[in-house]
Image 1: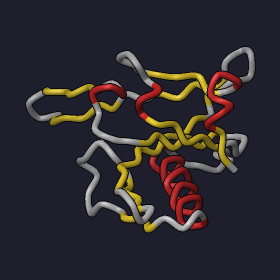
Image 2 (image 1 turned 90 degrees about the horizontal axis):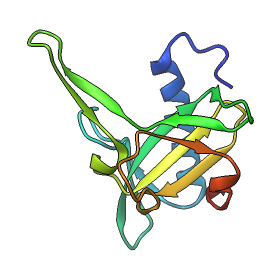
Image 3 (image 1 turned 45 degrees about the horizontal axis):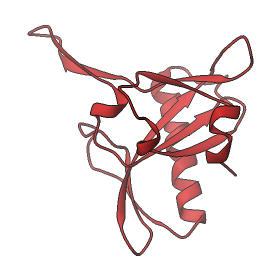
Length: 132
């Protein structure tokens, strides 16, 4: 799925497009923020409530064939050498949408991450959250 991506930004755009397709097909109203300085990539409206969605992609596999998904974000200003790193638990979102290189997708509520998590491995342990 990501073999023709020139960089991680292109890979992320494929993930974002997949998330928009999924939510739109399932009758959500999808809102895209005007910038990328927030902890979420989309806001979705199911007619009852709004939810913030973080979109992640992965092409990194474990030796057992599951995908490793990095949940950390890094940002900051290179001029003053201040770098901000956040784990999943510190970020402000409600749902994690994951697109893997083989096309499998997951929609995981943030509550599933009980501790400070910097990465997860999706496969059988998150099977209940796999979506079509």
